[in-house]
Length: 154
Image 1 (tube, one colour):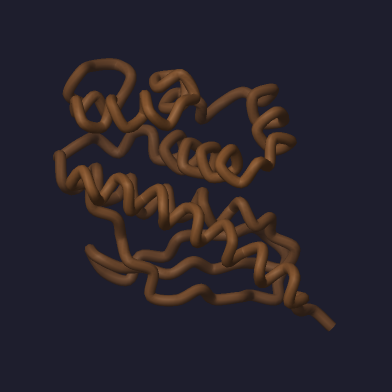
Image 2: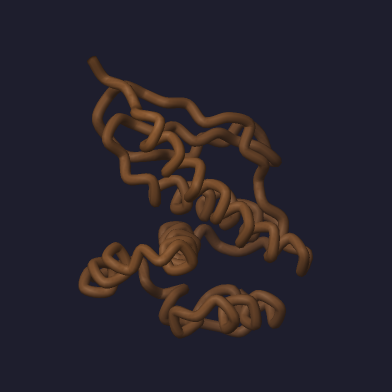
């Protein structure tokens, strides 16, 4: 019978809490994030997904055997939606922002295996490369409104 152990649920919440701390740091410099109405668990195999409810909120759907870090990725999508809406940006780099938020969460939690594996893969690294894989540089880029690698304002 499918389900989640208390340990697995704690791990999801650990990632959620860490991602929210980082998003709160962004909120401190006036960047919105979407609020999370709830987390829905699905007994079907898969990963996680962000589901927007409205312009300000959404929920995360977590599928059976989904990596806990996927929660951070999905919160990154919610952040990118706000960034895009607030600054009238093209719908570029959504997965890159999502992976960047996950990267910073993984690093903060000391989960370097995922980071090592991610660096070996191709794709969705533009934001991380733009900020040199460094949270302080990421924050500086955000303050300077250098959101995307191609230009200084978009």
